[in-house]
Length: 477
Ligand code: PLP
Image (tube, rainbow, N blue to C red; front, top):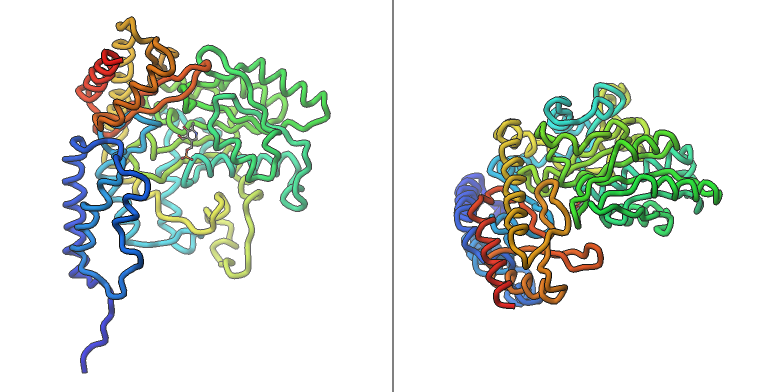
């Protein structure tokens, strides 16, 4: 009798197509530089090329791959292009892609230590770097009362920090009964929207997030924070949370952690530090000052998926008091009970995050760290900062342009002196050309261009070419 059809891809087919896909990715890395960075796809164009319903009968895999080239690639914006200077980077690297592949191949779900001990135990190994290597203070390390966990994103980290802060401030009451409207928190007017979103999701009126004014470098003014806190206390409200940012999205502003931290300590406020992109800089001793004052933090996060060659998603989130986080997020139904958890000898990371289930993200981060070594990672971080500084020098040397602020690291905010319309035109023409991709923000009420250097394969020639193209477009105004 014939064997019934299994419909599965056999290991032999998997090997064949797996090699083909790895070859495809390697070739993509080689050619991505030549592709238009910003997708030229019109709304609905990708969808129109797809069949209206899924196939009844499975298709050969080469047909699927052919459609990747034909339909998918033209609909992509190439974040891995060395000419990608938009937003903040979201870079990857060979070891991280291979770590991701292996993680998918293993397919483990590490919600509990017991559901895959290695998935849990590798995680602190990659996160808990020695202070002299990483700039991470002892207060956030697992050897003390703290510890780290990999989250999907800085947004999730902010939400977890906020919920833990809310529970600490209300002695666990808000989880039991919801919270009243008296809790108030603070972040600078330049902080990322994920902080406000966390307030929305944590059931705290978003109007209770006070936006603190910033100085000429777009950093939070600590005295303005102190004044707002005092006003709220006088008004009978309960200040409980401050989000400080190390490297704001619009402007790379660096909030002064020592002053903010001292105030938080004095007023018993939870201090969360969002270092989504710029936290990575602390790997280099010469940039470690960006984390000065982090010893005050109750929580901190940075994103290897932005600037540490680890593909999305990977956010490292640390707390000083892991018990506060766990007690805020832990819930243990009968079906998850097990002896290892009961022994108290293991970490169950489900208690450190929003979802129950979790991917084996530590693998890709571990691959990256082992492949590059601290030396290799420092080399690339330094190189990106140098390139940004070089670009800033070129801007300074051209009378038609001005810097919005002195770039502390790898983001340059600059504008043509001709006003918003001129800048908008320059940006649109550059992006439409496909030669490079940059985005804008508003600083001091003016449209400002952002050149963010952090793509894995960006070299001096790419930044130089970007500047040439910007000048060409300025000529055409
Ligand atoms: N915080 C800052 C300073 C950011 O720049 C960003 C994203 O650019 C985020 C938070 C949100 O990051 P994620 O996509 O990991 O939630």
